[in-house]
Image 1: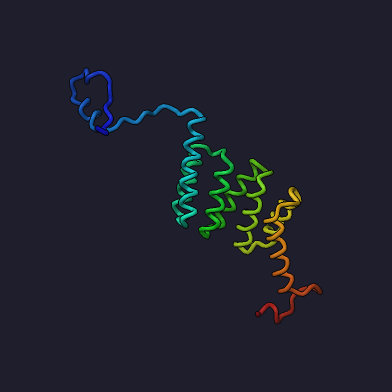
Image 2: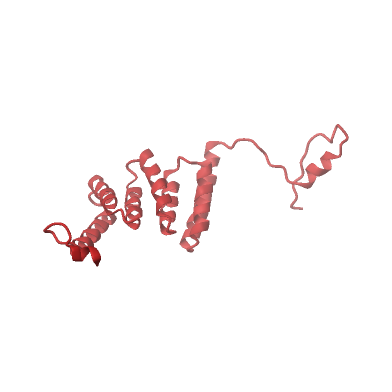
Amino acid sequence: AGSLRVVGPADPAGSGDDAKANATPARHERALDPTTQGKLANLQAAVGDAYREAGELRDAIDAYRRALERCPQFHDIRHRLGSALREAGLPGQAVAELRRVLRSAPDHLASAVQLGLAYYGMGRLDEAVREWAAALARDPGRADALLYLRLVKARHSAASTPSGPASDDDATA
């Protein structure tokens, strides 16, 4: 009852191929319209969100990538991919995806904040601070960027002296 039957001319050459065609479902190779592509991409991204919420980051990453195969221009999905990559301990890949978002959509400040987190995770403090400061400059109410800037400045100002370069003792600690 659940099988797909291909309807068409009944094997005019007499090769017996129509039985093979009826045995496997036919896949239409027509191009989907952009609206349908977008709907399918968003559904695939929702699957990625569910995997991410469950802590299944590899599956989430795969789902986001499949969604982006359909609609690579969907910045929100690419942002979620970048965030999931960062959370999965793949900050280099996260940086690439988040930079791509920001090249196409410079006002996507959530990506700038995530990019700062990825840089921070890689030990690239100056770049992290630059991203958070830029996000805060564009939106002074951006609480996450302000929080990260304050935390980093507090953590790193407590570890360094304001009077100049670190001493030899600091280098061996």
